[in-house]
Length: 395
Image (cartoon, rainbow, N blue to C red):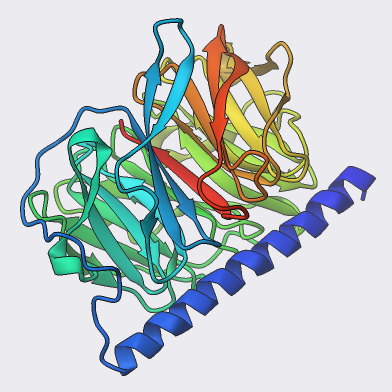
């Protein structure tokens, strides 16, 4: 094992243990509150029963250490500079550490996982968040979830359980945000030890992809009319117990799957998606990135892909060529905050945002020029250390 691989592996173990501790701590706290009969433990905000879609350019950051959600309006000044303006009421206080977030395609609701509970916030004018369902959870899980995604039609929410065997499938009430459990399919890994990392719905529907760390990846057929996953997923092994698949991105045509892969053979792995979801690795994959790739996103044009490198605090950028082959962009990798764990693109398509668990800064926003990233602005998301572990943006 090379020095870089050893450093990545040590970082993976440390981050995984930190994540498990946060989830376990929150889950135990949530369970205690349920046992003592203290429901609705989030701060009581105005109840929302119905909502409509919003078109604003907003981003939200989950702060695990301070147990808050910070929200910002993304805009471009008259001088052409990107700006982040904090939303009224931000940061929004929680009673447990948030672990995951997802925004519906209509930008109506922000779902937040905290402990064993899932909460829905209505996204209002100016990006202001209002807790729905009389400030009560819209769903309760067993051990908390590590990742969530919503189907492109906005009707189904998928949550990947921390238990390493279960996926929760919920029907979304698009007016109230309330979730109704439809199914809880279980799975076994492709190889190695399961470390649940990410669940991702293909932009066109049809498939749901799951990253299981050293346990490889799964491809489920998905029927949008019923919201149900196929019983038998295709499996992709990582090829090594020292290789971890951490995050997934799928292009708009469901033609290629991009995987943030750390450890042995680290980088951005690219697979073509064939009939029935069959995956074939493209020539030259995985493509070298920085140390510890942990998240991956595509830009709005589908011409560029970016990976957050958690171990060395950088972002790698690539152009996408014929056959899915990646070429590193000029200046890549780009400097980010410490322990960068999450990337998002704003709904204008002009900016990439990066949340860094280690701060310095908590949230960075980058402009793109022919794919090349330039830091436009940055901000703290509260009183540091905030533990800014995730950023999401309206669509």
